[in-house]
Length: 114
Image 1 (cartoon, rainbow, N blue to C red):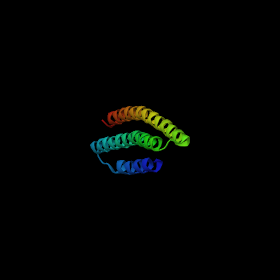
Image 2 (image 1 turned 180 degrees about the vertical axis):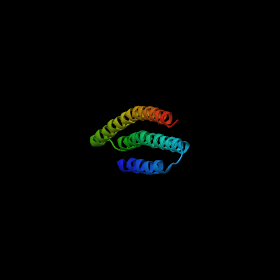
Image 3 (image 1 turned 90 degrees about the vertical axis):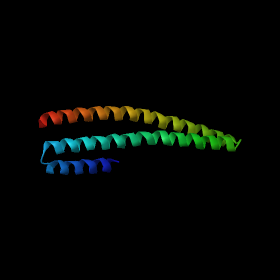
Image 4 (image 1 turned 60 degrees about the vertical axis):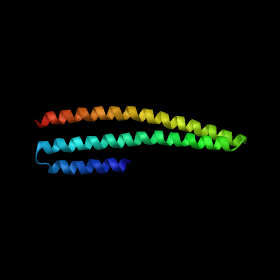
């Protein structure tokens, strides 16, 4: 994941160096912000998807056997699902803070370019 962000930053940096007009730079920054939002939303969504999958498998394991070990495994899977869901909520907060910080940065850069 770090490599993806590094690659995006490197591409954007090299593209910004070649941008001859401030309008082009503003467009590039807006495109970068949109990509950032999509990446963050995808990462947060993955937590919810994984948590739901764990819960479904937990139900199958718990229903398929009366063995005590299966019940314990099912319980552990449900606890893991709750933990992933909590990470997703935390990720949503972080994504929101990152979006606000990026918007602020873009506003300041745009003001400097005027």
